[in-house]
Image (spheres, rainbow, N blue to C red):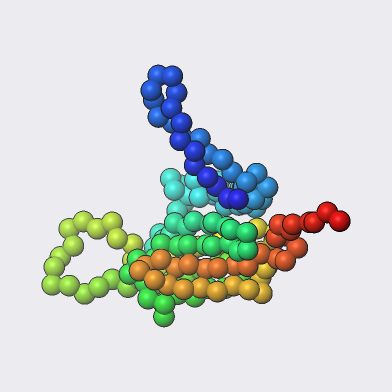
Length: 156
């Protein structure tokens, strides 16, 4: 199922959101990435490596596959490398600064090296991974292993 968002209204007319999750997948992803999540939180304020940008990502699923999306605006596919070792996908990219007749006074654009490692769920088929880049969004499709797909069982 994945993640679904359900809106409801309380008695004081205040809107709130409730998040429903597929507990098994959510737990698997959380447990597999817990150390990285803690490191990310700590490195934001302490020892964040200079010159390396970690692009945001989203991991989604349907019954047949996972979809991993990374935001890489301004990066061409020639400047992206994707490697897989066991259940870890490593994406490295580079975005060069562009020459201009203007002097930059302030910039929040990320340039230089981009690196992101994502641990895939255990039921990901590592032999069936594809990728595409469109409009600054890198999308990887990872098939699920056959045995992990839901099956319908008929009664005889």
